Structures are given as structure tokens and as C-alpha cells.
Length: 130
Image (tube, rainbow, N blue to C red; front, top):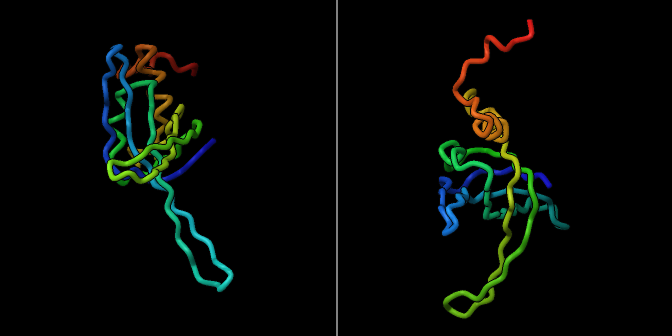
């Protein structure tokens, strides 16, 4: 599934007890439609997102950034401190594409792959086939 929205806060990296790291962030998706009376109705859906591939992308995921995410959705339910039933949506992110300024238009998945291959920051001019 793909979703496109804006980050509602800067991403945070958490280290779990097993030393794995996860990047957590929240995305808002705005949608609009016209009701039977012809009035415009705006609706916002919020997703709590988790990205497990590389923690280095957190520096790129800042509040207000437009992102296109690929992954899967799950739901969660809980009871708040004041006893009210609550529900939310989680998005388990497998790929992140940043949209926006010239430097931000890149695919984070490609960045993650190059980092895991040990090629991040290395020149590739000698590797060109022409």
C-alpha cells in the first residue's frame, strides 16, 4: 500500500533492548470531498509510522516534509488514562520517497541500500560503463 502525506513531527530513533533501531514518525494525510449539500468537507487521517531498515534516514524526516510511503497498515486499540476507548493506525514502512526541494527528492530506500553495501559517500565515477 502507498500513502502520501506530511510529517507531523521530526522522526525519532529508538534503540530496543535487543540493540535493533527503529525510526518512528507520524504522517498526516489530507482528503476532501463534497457532501450531499455540496459543501466541501476536509478530513485528516494520521498514521504512526515505523521504519526498520536504517536509522540514518531520521535526519531527512523533519516536520512538514512531504513523503510517499510504501508498506502495510495495521490498527491498534487501547483505553486512555481517562477510560475512553481509542484507536489508531500504524504504518509499517518498507520504502520512503521524499518529495520537495532539490536535495530532498530522493528515494531513502536507495540510500539505505547503498549504506548497507558500504558504498555511501564513495565516488562512482570510475564505475561508469561509458
